[in-house]
Image (tube, rainbow, N blue to C red):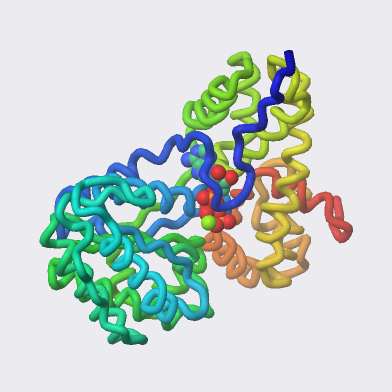
Length: 378
Ligand SMILES: Nc1ncnc2c1ncn2[C@@H]1O[C@H](COP(=O)(O)OP(=O)(O)OP(=O)(O)O)[C@@H](O)[C@H]1O
Ligand SMILES: [Mg+2]
C-alpha cells in the first residue's frame, strides 16, 4: 500500500491563514457583537495594531469571515497607491455584480450567503471615480443592503502606508459619513504600531483616531500550544504534550513563530508517524534561522541608521539592557539615547522593563543581531 505523505498543515508565511486561529477571541467577539448590535456600536470601526508577524492580517481575514457568515458583503483592501480608484472601479462594482447575479433565494454564492430576496436585484452603481463617486456608490449599495438587514464590511490592511495616506484619509472620511447616516457599514483596519501612531498624529482622520483600538499581544502559552497540537493531530500525526510544550515555549507566543516552528518540526521526517523530541529540537533551530530572513531582517532594514546602532548596542547583553550601557557603547549622552529609546518603543521593537532598562520585543532579535557582520561583542 502506498502511504500518502501528509503535507505540513502549518502556514509559515505572512498573511496566510493558519490551520487554527487561537487566542484572538476578544477582538473577534467584539467585532461580531458590533455587527449584530447595529449602527453606532463602537466595534464597527476597529483599528488593529501589533508587531510584525503578530497576526494582524489574520484577524482581518477572520473579521471578514464573521461578516460573511452574517450575509454581509466584504470589501477587502490594502492601503496602496490607487486605493480609491480601485474601490470605485473594481471593488464596489464587483460587489454590486455579486448581488445582481445571486439567486433570489437565500443561498451561498462564492462563499457569501446573501439574505433571501437580495439576490438578483438590479443595482446600478454610479459610474464615478474619486471620493464623491466612492460616497455615492457606497450609499447606493448600503441603501439596498439595509433593506435586507445586511451591510458591507470594509477591511484595510497596512493602513499606515505613507504612499496611500490621502486615499486612506478619504476612505476614512467616507466611512465616517456613512456611520453618521447610520448606514450598515463596518470598518476594520490594521497596521504596525509606530506607523499607525504616526498616521494618527498626522491628523489624517479623527475617525481613525476614535476607532476602537486593539493591540494584538503574543499568544498565551495555552493558545500557542493549541495552535501547534491541534493541527498536527488533525493532520494524522502524533506529538507528545512535552514536545508541544517545548515548541510553544520557543515561539514566545509569536504566531509567526508558531507556524514556522510547527512547520519545520513537521518537515524533519514527514513519513514518521510521530514528531519526536529530536524533530522538535532541529525544527526549532531551522525555524529561528528562517525567522532571521523573514522577520528580523525586514524589521531592522526599516529602521534608521541610529535606531539600528541602538539595537546593536543592546545586543551584547544576555538579559535586559541598561540604558546607561547602551549610551556608553554608542558613545553618546543619555539625552540623545533616550530619544531613540522612545522611538524604538513606539515601533514595538523594544520595551521598557524596569526603570532604566529595556529588552527586545521580537523573539530571537538579539541572536539575529549577533549574527550580523558588524556586531561587536563586549
Ligand atoms: N491567532 C493565530 N494563531 C495561529 N497562527 C497565527 C495566528 N495569527 C497569525 N498566525 C500566523 O502567523 C503568521 C503571521 O500572521 P499575519 O500575516 O496575520 O501577521 P501580521 O501581523 O499581519 O504581519 P505583518 O506585520 O508582517 O503584516 C502567519 O503565518 C499566520 O498564519
Ligand atoms: Mg499583515
